[in-house]
Image (cartoon, rainbow, N blue to C red):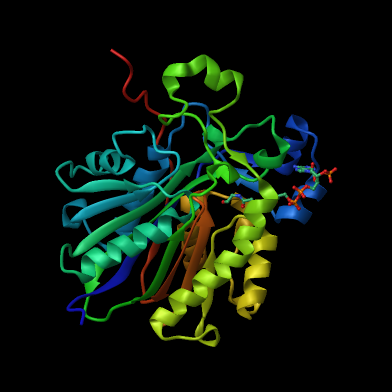
Length: 349
Ligand code: UT7
């Protein structure tokens, strides 16, 4: 028996002003607007400039979520960031966000599970609130995938973009966290991974990293595609079962924006009509951990999601990993923020 419930009280988002179109990509690799649109549904992505970093997007998105909720940073008990592209391997992105929000003493940590990060983080936040550990948890999904995208590889570079979305999760009498399903299968990391920068190919072996282009996303596209199509629907069903709901009771699906064909196949497997699905992939491409909160934020901006709606957020990604959350929506304002100006960050002494 839960003594506390969790609800989302504010949503924020932030996207870079720089835009990379399919036509721009035609100049970089052997591809075409027609191929990209047909195979992915993407037309544009927003990307930071050479000096831009993930915290430039995460901090304004976090601040916007707080402002939307009418709360101050001091009101937050814990900050969780989901990102595959934090500013540094450590400190965690969440520590940087906490410091810039002016609350450096707060618990702050990152969740590193690639594109499934936001649903993992939201599940963690809601569970901490349910357990009575915290009253208020700020969850941020933020990425600058342009930093790890190989713009000489046409099989990956058309897919990825940058952005950030944030939600404030607070204690509430009614529990809006209805169900969740999380999973992973790390048996073959090479299906989708960033080889360099960890202990296997550390940055200290910089020559090797650059020669083999190990600092970029590597992916077996078709394997990921097949995995995604099967796993997204199965995960959404598992989370719905936990919530005691059927697919017919879904008002909106907010899927990870990886590929329009994956989204369409998932909807078909769930038997959910496309008008119940939130899609903004044409404008942003795949922004990994930011994609679900970004899509949610834009749908709220457009006034699409009415209070009491049942929302299923469903993701998959590197790990391989997957996750779904079923959420009862209550009225929560949304706010858009501008990115921070790039700053020098910590430089070697
Ligand atoms: O967040 C998770 C991250 N990853 C994903 O979600 C990726 C999931 N996978 C996919 O979205 C799709 O597999 C892709 C969009 C990556 C590729 O689409 P596909 O329909 O699976 O294409 P394919 O890999 O079967 O390639 C078909 C053809 C190949 O040429 P041949 O061998 O038939 O001559 C590719 O070389 O398309 C070629 N190709 C391209 N052509 C033009 C691959 N990339 C491109 C490109 N432009 N950008």
